[in-house]
Image (cartoon, rainbow, N blue to C red; front, side):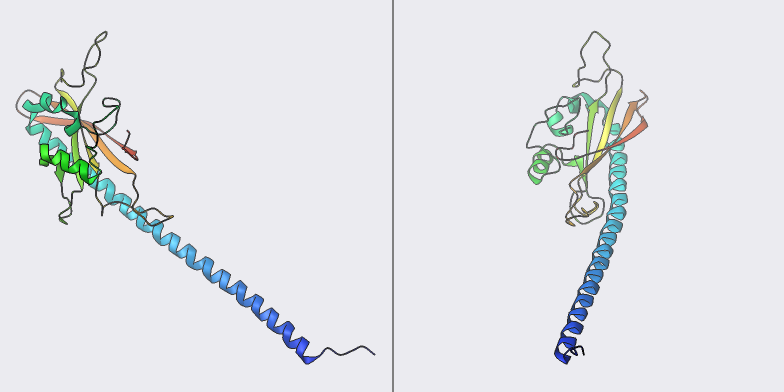
Length: 211
């Protein structure tokens, strides 16, 4: 004859099985919730990425209008990159800091020189876009490029989205995505009192927004 298992052993085995099943179910629920949260964050990020693109594109239109109306001041603007182009680029490899338009101290310093370079697009009282100007390569070889002077009635104008609301959030931390977006275009003066634009371009960057 074989010994019959006790009812206590049977109950213990059943309880262990139930615990394992509950653990598996909890793991599945946690996984589903994490996936849903990730998908929601990703959807919000995609949505706000479009907003950031619109932010920069709208800023470019403002840049065209502002710098087009002020053609007579182009050389003055080009000679002051710390105000009108404090964004690292091939034409300004070492922008004057702390005039970084993405930082509050930088914005205040630039605003002290020309507040018209900032615009609030969504009416929340905060700056959303910074517009800037820089020279194109308009010197003939063997002359070196003179970024502080316009020679061909053409400049590059751009807009940098610096909004705290019109930007996506990072999927891993849900914090604001620090990556910046700049959109640029060629602005040409036709000599008849009006300006026109062509050759739009966009670029992304991070940190000091290298392009």
